[in-house]
Image 1 (tube, helix red, strand yellow):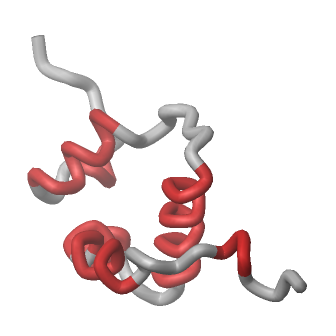
Image 2: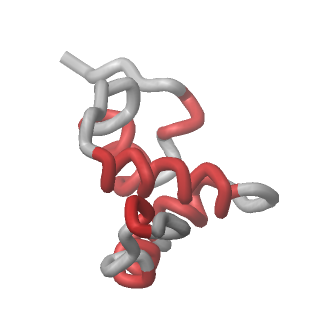
Length: 73
């Protein structure tokens, strides 16, 4: 049986995997939620395909970021 997907996630394997494994799945992990938020912010003006392809680089760039300690004294 063929999996039914949103038509805009049919561009490539990365987008299909994102749709099948992550899209619409509840997330309660703070780091993962921050990651998703950054994708939305960084996506402004870019295609989602570009963001999906750059995910590995974004994960490296934000690897040591801890938003919980920023600005608190």
